Amino acid sequence: MSQKVRVVQYGLGPIGQAAARVLLEKQKTGLVELVGAIDIDPKKAGKDLAELLNLETATGIEISSDAKKVLRESNADVAVHTTSSFLDRVQEQLLLCAKAGVHVVSSTEELAYPFVRHPERATALDMVARQHGVVFVGTGVNPGFAMDTLVLTATGVCTDVTRIQATRVVDAGLRRGPLQRKVGAGITPEAFAEKKATGTFGHIGLRESLLLVAEGLDWTLDRIEETLDPMLANRDIATPHAEVTTGQVAGIHHAITGFRHDHPLITLDLKMYVGAEDPHDAVRIDGTPPIDLVVQGGIFGDTATIAALVNTVPLILKTEPGLRTIKDLRIPRAFATSPMLHAH
Image (tube, rainbow, N blue to C red; front, top):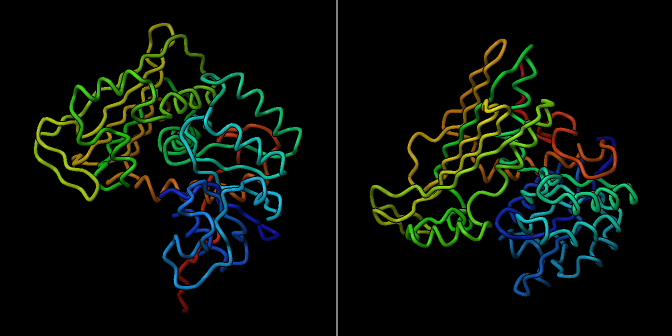
């Protein structure tokens, strides 16, 4: 980056707070500057950001619930947006950023590939982004990397691809409290069924990853099958955020497969539950040559999500305006890191 990028943190839940810490740390490189913080929680508004983050030194950044004012007065280039998983709940926030001339890197899972689930909203967002010369993009660890970007990148060394299978096994017991609640840790199977019926429960974004991979490979799917089932605890498990007894829900098993002419082309299989054994991420590609990747221990989601958001900040500035997906950007990579230098 040739000049310092001015960033606003929009949303200060657990992920937003962690992103703000990383941005403040990266300020030391002179490549990025955190210039504003937005959150609607009245318990946070009015405080110096340092107080919320338990930092010893004041940042001079006052948390505000007035997003319009912060975006206007901060002269920001990019907003790191972490408020909700659902596009209908964040659309107005995104439009507010666009009208202020601020690009948006968002953790909203439905924004990762909104063109099928929300075609009208996607069209409207794309139009406004182009009008104001900004980019909207949704990213994170999943969707955003483990089951889409990593998959597509792996196909880059194949001359032919016939099938893709991506698997994640995640120990939710090591993750933040909101995620454990999100996967139903500690509820009954009956409560799981009730939550499942709402259509807003479990992991959001698996369908978006599937569609992103399909578009990236120019594959047309004529049928999609999706399942969401509870993972039941086979023992009592306690975490700092949940108590799960034997027989209760420990988490989810969420899978989706895209077919063409009854041939399964893409399968994404996610098990995210408290006490998961052998956590890992895996990508298997049937092709020439075949690819079999395994990340032992798995990609730690909370940290990886923050990294995906922050590392997209410089990339978004080099992207054509509009509603984009992560595959439209340059190759994801870390920036403003501090490598160990050894004298010889």
